[in-house]
View 1 (cartoon, chains in turn orange, yellow):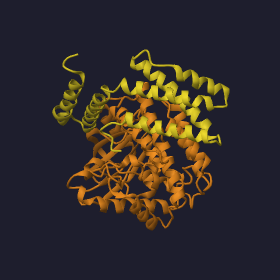
View 2 (cartoon, chains in turn yellow, brown; view 1 turned 180 degrees about the horizontal axis):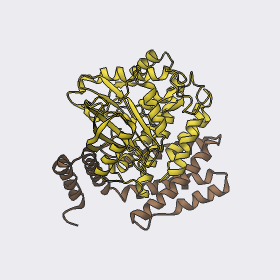
View 3 (cartoon, helix red, strand yellow; view 1 turned 90 degrees about the horizontal axis):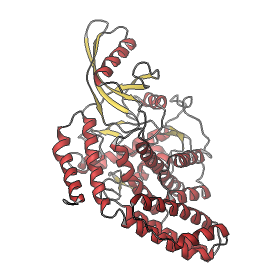
View 4 (cartoon, chains in turn green, cyan; view 1 turned 135 degrees about the vertical axis):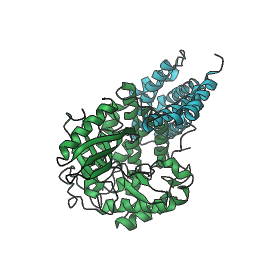
Length: 346
Length: 148
């Protein structure tokens, strides 16, 4: 990894190339921030004079591929998802540049605007000034998810970038994928999740009501909110794909996101209320049997992510302590969530 | 060892969280220090039970295998269950206990998949015992920091 000063200089070179009319281009205040373990996330100020000579400044976020990460994802899809939803009912930051040529910063990256002064950490919802806004945030969170579910992937231009799937095979594709991740990365036997996989295959869900854009990591922690209780941006689209919209709803209510240690999903609202909000917003039905299937699937997917983080850490590819912490904290919680759904939690 | 290992870990974690992290920049490094402090807190909790929970679980699995083996028709599986059911942990090094636990849990997966396919009261009895043990296994591993 280049030193921060080198990275700043190299990004300034890149910005000059992207903004041929600009002069005096320089990068200020470049610093790495915590933005999930799937990409390196950097914050910076890009200062320059525009073609008329006026001084300009943009606060930007640079997301760069790391050597190892929690999940193997496609930066192009993440970039295109941000682009697709910009200025829609789904708030997202403006995505500016996608660069897949490693000659600039050694690894592919993309650049988007920074929405400064906002919060995303789940634990911040447990105390003032955010705790009083949990209900309001919850209503927005699942209303926005309904908007994602009802958006037309073709009209958004995403069917060219994302693999198309049929309503009756969406479940199998996802289950095959995450079982494959477990087969590859499993660091210790997973009897509970293996039993869940067998159950899921014996009891497939009904076909998807429609094929939607699936954010695939829609949870508290992956959106920005302000002190007034407004959701300002949905982040972390790196796993986005086309599929059954119930996949997102189920992931968002996964037990492991009950940060407040009560029945509120994502530390915001109880499950029954979440489902009603989502149904009203999406115009779709959350069939109880289908949702149960996707909730149990979410445990398989979650365990896939946690065992991968353990594998990355153990292999030495990426020894960010967050990877070890995620594995330690979540593998057991994910097992307990699966047991609860299968009716076997003591 | 004195001071006691758990106490030392606790002090280190607290110091990292309260004395070191607030003075670390940039924010990403600060988050890493916090995460490291939380890891120490987890290690402190795990330390006291690190051998006992593995021994307890290995014994529970062996007892279950010994109980299930006579009712298993598949000769290969029955023989392996019976053999595992007679073994005990003689080497208490964590790496050895962990390796044995992994082998026993692999056998558990095989047994569970097998009985799921059987249509008998005995299969249901074994299956219920397996679920009880799996629930107990998550209770043994649960960390205080877990939200769920």
